[in-house]
Length: 126
Length: 263
Image 1 (cartoon, each protein chain N blue to C red):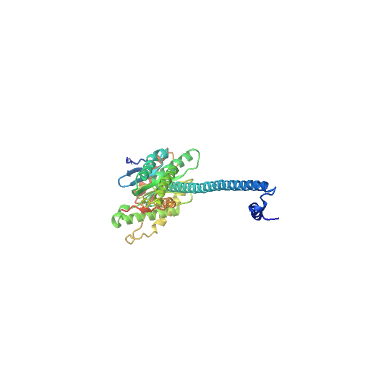
Image 2 (cartoon, each protein chain N blue to C red; image 1 turned 90 degrees about the vertical axis):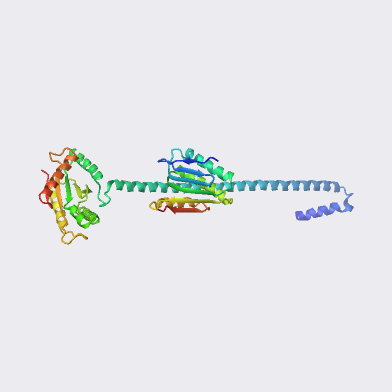
């Protein structure tokens, strides 16, 4: 399974996958011109990883600003994770934020309402 | 009249009784009863099938409704999150705008903002508007304060001066921190004589100001230069500022704690 390593730009987040460790990392701002095109590889990775193995999945998130399409895609990814979790898969999510930007934490909170898997909102320290 | 179940029993009993087997109606009743039983069974099967169709349709409808409701909830959440992102961007925008116009230490406008305001004000006057005044004021012996009491005390002095200036200004006046210990007042629709009154008032208040953390007897003062915007020497913002600046330096040279008007 091919891992993703997409560096951040001013309008797109950094995306890294680690199939061996079962980690999907996304951080930065996200307002791509065509969000569905941009995130398709991520959606594909999630589908394949969840479909082809039964190993745990950790979502490691440090997203800041999300446009509406990006929010929609995050909801889709979290839905897939939720489905897998309900089916017995080990799924966890950590959403990191800078302590001086509480808004990010509040929005992460909003996302967490549809998720029953462990969803941790953590301030970066140091 | 007999109930259908009773009638069923009666007919079955009659047909089973050997004494009626030779009866002329026996064959007819036997045939009719067989037909009746077939039809009843058929009707029951049809009803059962029909019921199952109805139930399936009903379930399908319910699942559509449930799915619809789920989609609506999802959409609402999406909109709510999106709205909040927009709000936070707007707040951020506002903070950045303030930061770009404000002097961090004193909370006054910064030089950049004041420069734009001066350009606007001068353009307005040159288009036939009323003249205005620019006042440049510099805290006297500020270096001494910094050296004697430290930078924090110096910062405090600048904050107190800013507060004093703001408290004496009229609604339409505007004040900026122009440089280190230099402040600029923009007084729209004001002649030099009126500016003079305002500045002398500020100087008087400043003389009575007590600054904590300063050696006893420390008296704060500023030197001021006033320039009126319709002076013949003014062609742009730079030349207007240069006039006020020259007047302020004249005030410094004349012994400080003075107010000089541009020539």
